[in-house]
Image 1: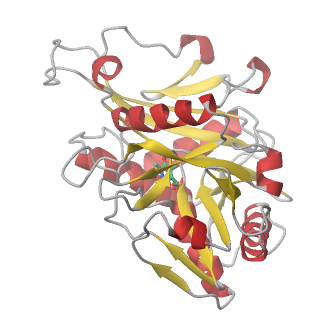
Image 2: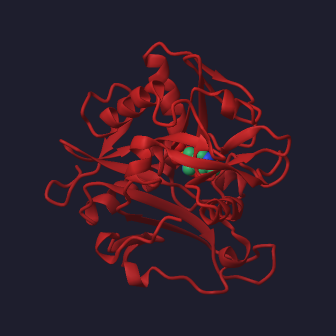
Length: 319
Ligand code: PMP
């Protein structure tokens, strides 16, 4: 489980319904609808340290996905995507972060009790904190040990997997706790048909004979923004990327396996259920894509896809 950020590394200023408030004051009532029924939608966005200052990765794509999640959840966000895009940049700048993880969350507050969220106002919060490698620096370098969870992804027509809805993440939490209890770093979830869907907070890629395979949208996965980016980076290198449903055996046919996500970035998997993947360490394809990814996000090479947005520091305010 990710640890809460240590006090010195959290955002002292959190944006809460239009105003910046102190960390300790960013609180809600215990009878908020969200606490009882998980009625929130959220995003996770990374800001990277670059030679030109802190830059946010694919900010507008994340904000657009937040609004997509809100639309499906029937939440009328009282702000525009443009406003929330600016606020994300502001949160980074105000807190003087050089790199951080940004967490916008939209949730239902206090109204009449019961499932129907009658008179429950919508709240919008954008917080941030410094967050190192989610699955560990060691994991990024050498690969993590994963297991196939006993928990299955929700099927189509049930809690949607293509949106980031708070309540839906109870499933990921159960799978993550199971993995931690059994000594694994991450869990992979199958869908109800037994196809491999994704990790608890990451998309999955399989490399077989130099070809890169990943489950398609519509197969109980989130449309990950890192997933799309890595697919583009692979194609930039002339690699073949195929979106296709994968059964569990593919995990062991694989020469390499890796996970992608805002938190997990590009993390190799070195074993599944105790069975080594390939040579049991990061493979050559994963290594190339991981360094292509980090080279771009940390500004070591030009941002040829236009993925980064500068968050001005307090000394050099945003125009
Ligand atoms: N799947 C799930 C279930 C997730 O929570 C995430 C994290 N947002 C991902 C995949 C990866 O998506 P992204 O690359 O957009 O962070």
